Amino acid sequence: MKKVLLITYYWPPAGGPGVQRVLKFAKYLPDFDWQPIILTVKKGNFPSIDTELEKEIPESCKVFRTDIFEPFEFYNSLKGNSSKEKISTFVLNKSKNEKLIDKAIRWIRANIFVPDAKIGWIKHMVNEGSKIINIEKPDLIFSSSPPHSLQIGAMKLAAKTNLPWVADFRDPWTDAFWQKDIRRIPFSIYRDKNYEKSVLNSANSIITISKSIAKDFEKNTHTKVNTISNGFDEDDFRYTKKRNPKFSICYTGTLGKDQSLSGFIKSLESLPGNIKENTDINFIGSFHPTIMDMISASQTKSIFHIKDSVLHSESTRLISNADMLLLIIPDTKNNKGILTGKIFEYLATKNPILGYGPIDGDAAEILNQTNCGKMFEHGDKCTEYILQTFANWEKEIPFNPDSDFISQYSRKSLTQALARIFSEMT
Image (cartoon, rainbow, N blue to C red; front, side):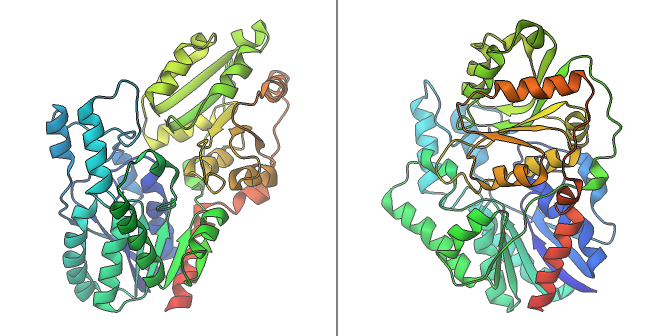
């Protein structure tokens, strides 16, 4: 069995969507004759913790954790927060009534910590990674980002050890939609683009999660770019669905200020009274203040039920038992290629999906191919789609998406595709 060194910042006990891709690759790679070795951090600043995920790490998988310098203690001291307080998911987003200290911190983050706030890991990663490689003798290096600074460390490690290297991108780099809120000086922009170009041209192979992002990367490199999407693990979805007393629409995860609910809320407000009275909207996760303000101002705020983030196992149970699932693609430039892990876990439930985003984007294409739902442009009303889905629920008419098409997004199938790339390179 060959060995691969998997480099990732997000690893259990980290929770949230960032950990799922590499964790599932590590879980299934041994089935395809590849033994994973993990290189990660000792104490990361993770938005959420999910210790249950540690059970999914294969017993044979060695995990090495290194030190990392993170600027968050400095950030918390400037803000007057506890040193143990987590940094908000929306730290780079502008907000109303922003204080001068918030603007200063965001400027420092954007212009000093390039490409991101994890640059303090690079030195430790290269030093410890070299030792691990000398002992474990892996055949290949695989690095998955964000944070994209770890790709710089992987690039240096590959050059130092002469090992083939696969760079995996769960998100774009300099073209990422959240970059528009970051006020960078020209030199910082140049540095970031230069880092990106160096990584793309140094990697032996590049992988990303959507065709649109792959096309954008191909403009900046001659390295082959492969597409392996996110997916779902069938082991996570072995629930027996129960009949809800009310029609349940569910959203799990985060909602940033670019993920507007305007069209969805307008649609809810236009529903007949008896439909609204028999509908529950369950939002579980972390939501930007502008989203919360939008819900509070809605005429339908009473049917919204907001909860904090939950463990992954609870999240999969909740979406499995919902009657409709809400998907919101950020309303921003370069959003056609956005494919969050959420859409694939939604597919696994085989429940109807109501999406907001580009109707010619990659997410919309998947909804159409799988017959799993419908995508609407941001701001558009989806009243008729909700009414039709409600009527089917009320009459207990089964929802029948294309199960065969959905199965291609299983984590095991996707890991097999990854293993093929590894084998071709070695």
